[in-house]
Length: 195
Image (cartoon, rainbow, N blue to C red; front, side):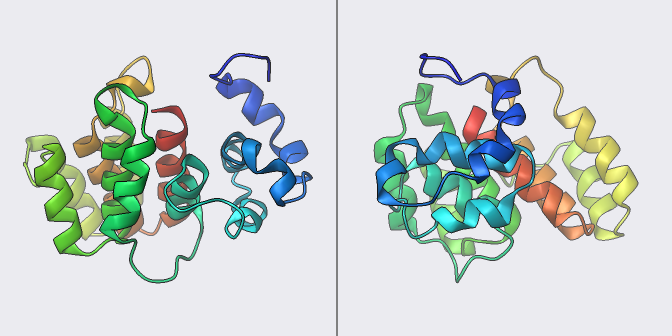
């Protein structure tokens, strides 16, 4: 992975199965976030789930698990998101916005929590555009192929810094509602890992 703070994505993909072999214990808790990110690049969500009791609520590994695991017990609280925001070193707390958008798209936060964070971070999740209306309609009729096509249009850009929480929310919500929840979860986890 190298010595730098940012691990290149391609190296995380290449090492996903090796990361899955690292035991989930306190000895490796300092490396939990990149290990979880690596596992989720290959869809190894069940292997990543072993870290759920090891990571602290509000850290990067916890956030990726909160959106990446197939099941999550109950709704994620606003306090947990607040803890994540306190640890968020991204420019303008962009990762917190991506986390809120992802959790909202997956239905893992209450509408009250969603609306509160939407206002606080000025995410514009409810703002409708022609594109958002089309992807929402495709999801409503469970047209997964059209959702995937429109998702590609919504993800135009040369890196994750160009992804807005509003676009991510509509993409994840539409994927989930059209029967592609696993794909929605992996995109959400990648957005948090790379955002």
